[in-house]
Length: 149
Image (tube, rainbow, N blue to C red; front, side, top):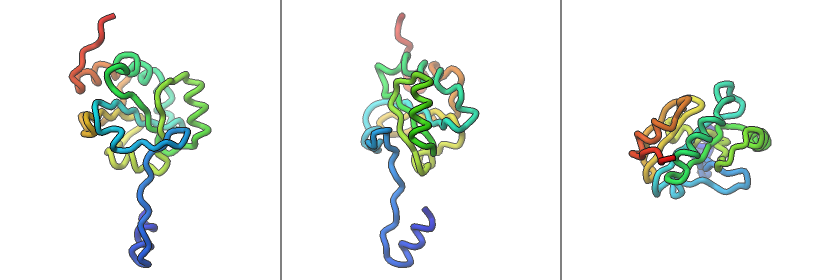
């Protein structure tokens, strides 16, 4: 990225913009997609040993808050085929976007994997490590109460 910027400035070429995350079919996740309402985003990577148990917290978030917030995942720098296999094996039914160049994670200050990012109208409410039981933390930050059984 830095090399592209230096070459662009030196030779008058346009700098390469960071890529937006794309889902497995190539659709981009843009700032406009996250600009309205509450978004619960888990940033993770199948290659990270710390992310091996990420499916259970994602399913818990989706079950508790999926009706009231957009729940999605962003995969940090991995290949689509490995992500597809992981999603199928883990039986995860949430949108997944690929952050192939790491720019989404960098832009949102993600420093560890797996991480939890909570946005309201595109503005961060929380960013930090994904807790084992994220449901109470999500509810606290989004000001939501758990649905009655």
